[in-house]
Image 1 (cartoon, rainbow, N blue to C red):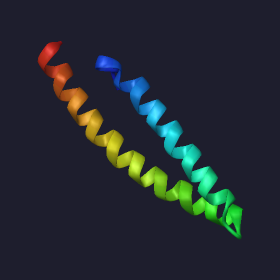
Image 2 (cartoon, one colour; image 1 turned 45 degrees about the vertical axis):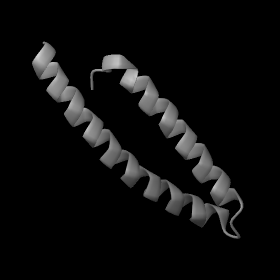
Image 3 (cartoon, one colour; image 1 turned 60 degrees about the vertical axis):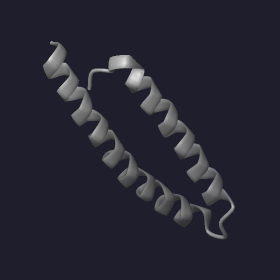
Image 4 (cartoon, rainbow, N blue to C red; image 1 turned 135 degrees about the vertical axis):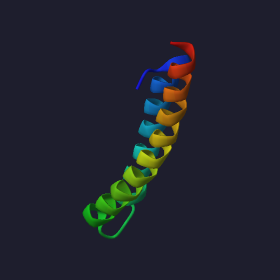
Length: 66
């Protein structure tokens, strides 16, 4: 993915924030290991959808400008 307009770093920073929240939420669970696995699986599904949308937009921009 070509990071037009800093999108790569923005996605990475947001991913880090969401991952840290998932870790904190899981750490407060009665079963942290199980909870962490569930939190990360849920987060990854969300990240793939969001990143896919961003990739589609970046690809369209690349076709227009390159």
